[in-house]
Length: 484
Image 1 (cartoon, rainbow, N blue to C red):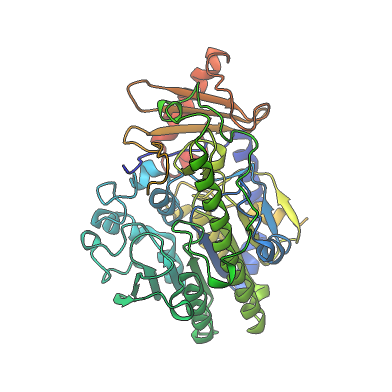
Image 2: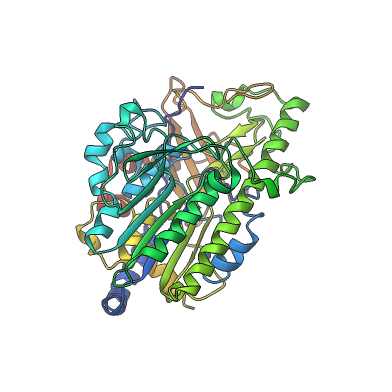
């Protein structure tokens, strides 16, 4: 299918931004003084296509206990991706920038995914480069960007700056029969579970890194398993799990998109039984693959405990974006502006974070890089990124085609959105197409986004939202954090 150029910009209310800035000012001295004594280790676990709205965290019992219950769970109402598509989203995480600033439009080379231009203009300013300069030992394992390792992207020889150990997947997510770039050298893998299953390999290489690291310097690890991305290949011991599970039938499942953008108006409704059977199977298999990620988290934390680093390590668990299985009669995919595609899981544990906390403050995935650099003690005023650190928030709360194919992507599925969470939970989206289509939802009264209220709201409010969106689409750095 065609690669999407869709991207979502989420705008945080000015009141929240101002209050956060005040908290940052109050806490800066305390945080910096503690960091001077001993720098904390940091681990970022990034899954591929794991939703939170449709039950994507249900299989993660160990992860929820070992990270969420031991630290902070960000409410699924407030943690968002900047764009619900793999390469642009991952580029936002790495650079801390909105898509209009890092210029990755879709999953193709022509869309700037891991292109030579990206390598020259974006990678040298990615957050791992800062960490490496601050004496962090760095490790990367798993999926990087969809076009990484391709001939047009410099092949496996290219290792992005900032990484001491590089074990990156060539291309898109796979579980077997893949190629890795291991510190710039090609390494081919087959279909032997013990040797090749990618989720387990990422874990095992990370454990080896922990054994071989220098105890004199802190470390950063970014672990990116393929789960639960297609082809949904579960480990042998989990291939019969969740045999009775089906995709959720509530909310917008199998509903028509009659008042929405043309892409949502064209699927057959109700869906054919063959599509429902297919998406139910995909839903089960996605969960099956996640059980190996849950094991990864458990083994990683056991290792950190055994080497006496657990209490000095921040662990982030999140996904690049969400997913849908039958919502608005779209069988399976991501890319859309709706909650199921843009909301992501976010769990964090670490020094100074009180256990069993739930935070309601809005967070974007562009904020991850600034938060990680904040933990490392970087001077954030010198970092050219669009996101903002949410470390103070955590610390202050110490207290392929399938049957009955449906088009889910197109070159003119390009949209930009503003989200307001103050007073009412509003989402305003404009499409860049010949319809100039606008969708507006009040998620306070309509959490499943069933009714587009663009024709019912005050035109003055629409004008305000349009002006905010214009500012957001041209912002950079500090101006992205202070839109009125």
